Length: 284
Image (cartoon, rainbow, N blue to C red; front, side, top):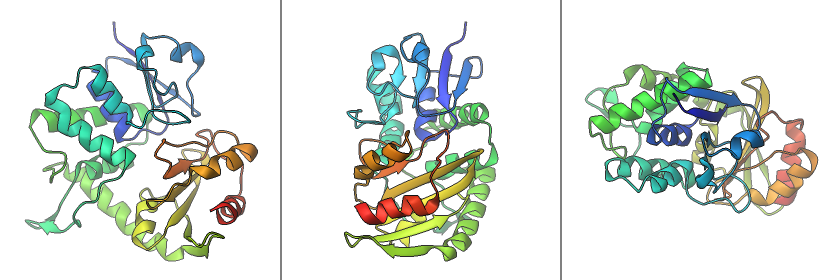
């Protein structure tokens, strides 16, 4: 009998790594929920694995999340790794995902090596997520990628060979994003912070805006899997002080305890771009 696993519509490397560590596979029942939180019937059942859908810190109930007030600082996959007794075989993978998810990783430029761009684990996963849109298929494909990387002994912190299809997709997105960034609007907050505002469908915009000198970045996607999505990021600056205001007018905003990135409700935001911009400009 397979496991019952609950995930959100937004699959990322942390979600995938957590599922991989817990032995999730295509033989299991994978349930996709909309919104920030799974139903209480799932969160209260230790036989149901809930990954990044609420229940932060409740690993005894098989809930792995690090979003929300008083949530653990460690990523979901780090929590799963600890519960499994910190197996050495996947230590590097867990450390990579945890750093990337909670702090970000400064890395070398994507210089070409042997006539091909260097590729990192995050690029491989990003390319896969751009190739496949179904959350369940994204999870299963991601698990297979991580399984191959661990079995072949690849170092997640180094150049990852192979996966050319996914790297090509990632590079195509990077080019489109570079063009989209030309329409960025710039403002200065009341606190003197340089704020970049961009409407785009292309992933990776927050980091790209940091590279352009943004201290705070507001990215709006009017049709992210059918919903209106905002992401607000601070370049080594906490932006979670905005949450009480945003949740007061648009309940469901949240983010990890690091406080440097927050997002609108997973079921979609009802706010206009200008309303979000005003909150940021007035409050930061």
